[in-house]
Length: 165
Image (cartoon, rainbow, N blue to C red; front, side, top):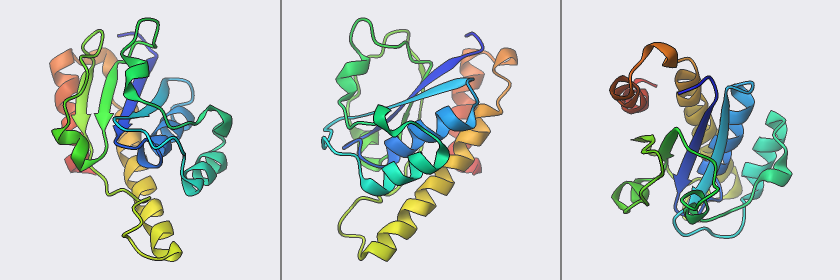
């Protein structure tokens, strides 16, 4: 691995959690990481609260769109160093075989865009909780000393981040 890393965050719909993670990773890492996001069954829409959060981070929201993970398994797609699933249903999903066999982990979060959560205030609270949880994990990831870790150690660290934050 070199000093720049690509990370793909996966969710079912690619409308909220993975979008927030993409923006957080890219903005928090100051060029060390590029975040990407995709979904197994993309909704085609990015949730307005996720867009507002990304904009407040300084992320160019014109880069955000709900897209299929198929885009990242095709020839010519950016090579991923890490793949992280963010929703519980994605854990049970069969994911594509990723070129280069990137390190993978599952960091489960509730879907803040789920209409069953409640009113707008409750949905906003869940979005904020998800954003804080993702921020904590991504900061731990960014701080890892990748230059001194082998692939197995990196894989272990990715998994342990979920439980240590």
